[in-house]
Length: 239
Length: 310
Image 1: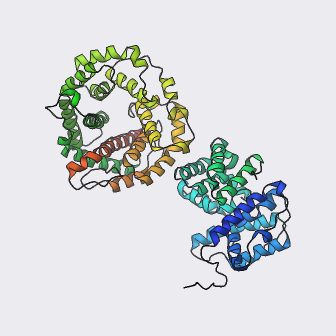
Image 2: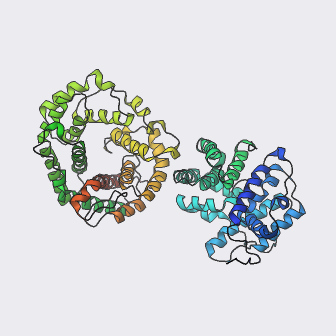
Image 3: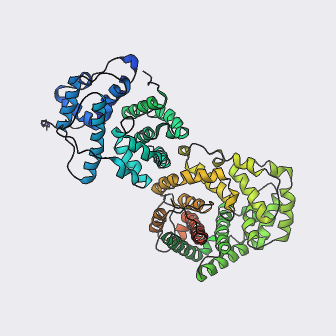
C-alpha cells in the first residue's frame, strides 16, 4: 500500500541520506578554491524539502561552518532557510535531558548565526539557551557521550568557558576518543577528536590521519575531520 | 580504602577458589603416561593453578578457609609434578625448552624446591642460548622473571627487553587489540613480579597505564572477555598508585556463577562442571589472582593513606 506523505514529516528513510549529502557539501565548501556556498542551492526541494530542513536541524551550527570558518557571506535567503528549519523542527520540550541538550546545540547555533551577522533572538523553535558546564562534570564515559551528542557546539562554536573547563579534562576526552575507536565508532571518534583538537596533538594527530582514510564512507565523519583539520593546522580538505 | 571493591574482590576470589578446589581432579595429570606425552594444556592448567594459589599464600590476606584451600591446592600441584621431579625430567630432556623452569618458578618462590632442577636451571640460564631465545618480547620478560624467582641472576638488559614490548613502546592507545592486551598485562606482571614490586615498572609506563587502562577496561568490560578484564584489574593493582574500579568488579561479580565458576564470556558453559572446566577454569583461576591482589592492595594502600581511583 503506498504511503501518503504527511505535511512536515520527511518521507521515511530520507533524512539520514540528506544529512550525509549536506555534510559532504559542507566539507566541499571548506575548500576556499570552491568559492561561494549557498545552503539554498544544495538543499533538496519538492518532496525532499522537509528532509533538507530536518538535515539542517540535525547538523545544527555546523551548517554555518563555511561562513564562520571561511568567512563567506551568509545570504538573507540562507538565514531565512535556517529559521524555517528551526520553526519546522522545534527543539523538544521533554524530557529534561533532551531539552538541556538542545539548549546547548541551539545556543551554539545562535552564536554561529551571530558570527555570520544574523541576530536569532526570539526565533520560534529554539530551545532556551543552556550551558554544557553541568555535563562537563560527569564521569568520563558519560561526559564523552554527551560531547558526542552536542557536536554542533564543538569548536569553532564552543564557548570560551567550556573550552577552559575542558582544558582540565583533556585526559577524559582522550579516553572517550580511545574508547570510541576501539569500539569502531568512527563518528563518535571524529567528534571527540574535534573537541580535543590540538590540546593533545600526540593523540589526535594520528587519529585524524586515520579517520581521514578509514572514515571516508561516512560524510558526517569527513565533515568532522575536515573541521578539525582546519582548526588544528589551517589546512583545507582535499577536493 | 574502597571497602566495596575490597569486599567484592574477596567474595569473587573466595567463590572461585572454592570451585577450583571442587574441581581439583580435573587438574590431575595422567599417572600412566610417558613424560613427553603429557599434554601441554594439562601442564598449563596446573601451572596457572600453581601461580594463583601461590599468590594467595604470598599475599596472606585470605580468610582461614581460603588460605587453607589455597595451601592444600598448592601442595596438590606440587604432588602432581612429582615434587618437581617431572619438571626436572622435562627440562633435562629438552634443555632448550623454557616452560619447565617457568612452571617451577612460583613453586620455588613459595619454598618448594627441587635440588637438581635448581642446579640445572642455574647452568642453563647462563648459556648463550638463553640470551637469544626467540620469544616475543613480553615472553622474554617471563624468562627473566622466572630466573629471579628460582634465584638465578641473569645478565639480560631488562630496560632493553622492556622497550621491545608493546607496552614499552607506549603506542597509540587506540591500537590495542586482545593479543596486545594480553602482552601488556603480562609485561606488567613480569616486571612487577605480579604486583610484589610496583617499582619494577618504569615511571613512564606507570603514567601511560594510568592514562589508558581505564579506557581499555571499559571497552573490554563490554566484550565480556572476563579473563582479559580480570587481568586488567590485576594490572591496576600492580601500579605504584593502584587503580581500582568498583563498577567493573560489580560486573565481574554479576557474571560469576553461583558455584564460583567464572565463565570465559565467549562460550556457554555446560551444566556439568567437569565439562565446563575445560573452557572455564582459566578465567576462574584469574578471578582468584585478581581478587586476591585487589584485596591485598586495597588494604595495604589504605594503610599508607594514599588512594587513587578510576
